[in-house]
Image 1: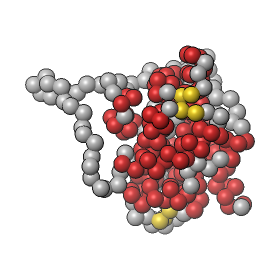
Image 2: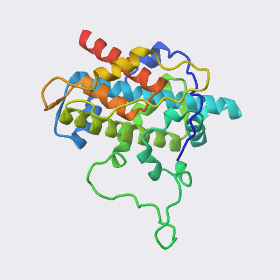
Image 3: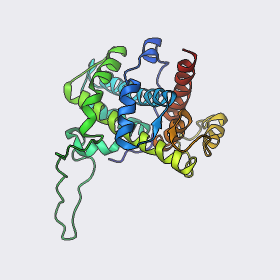
Length: 260
């Protein structure tokens, strides 16, 4: 699905209850990382990854709530609200490997044709026992429901399933990129693409400086640290307010963890 860059919606300040909730436990984060890499994941890295995933899901849910309120003043979220949120804010188009497995996105990801002009059918869901982001999406259901409750929202089961899948795919991709950062000794390919309307101010200078500081890493080549998660976040979130907020909140989460 291709979303047009538009003015990202400004979310209001998150309440303390939302910011304090930890829907994705470090044990779940480490389980996802074990599916991807044999590298050790530090405690602070697990908290950082959980925080980034929470920030992404919070923003998606908030966008869906806005769409529901604008359309029919509904309080229970449906898949159409998810589509509206992504269409309104291109930054929310994350976890896109889930799109091919969800009925919500059927017909929106494009139709493929072979060399003879025949439509290529969608791939069947794998029955393999090998862990994957799609197969393991159910692990996120409890966390997604907890996050919804903390935001005073409810969602139909299909919507919860989509949020499960997006969270699972996003965190799996984050794990892969963090492992790559460790292997390569830093972010060798990074940048920022920020959809900004004419006359709008660009992102603050500290964000650009922060990204460059993540281009080289310190530490051994066997452990994924919190800075590696931050670097992977810059790869997964291509720019704009969501990336900045995810980095800021992840740093705060790791500071609180260290102080606790």
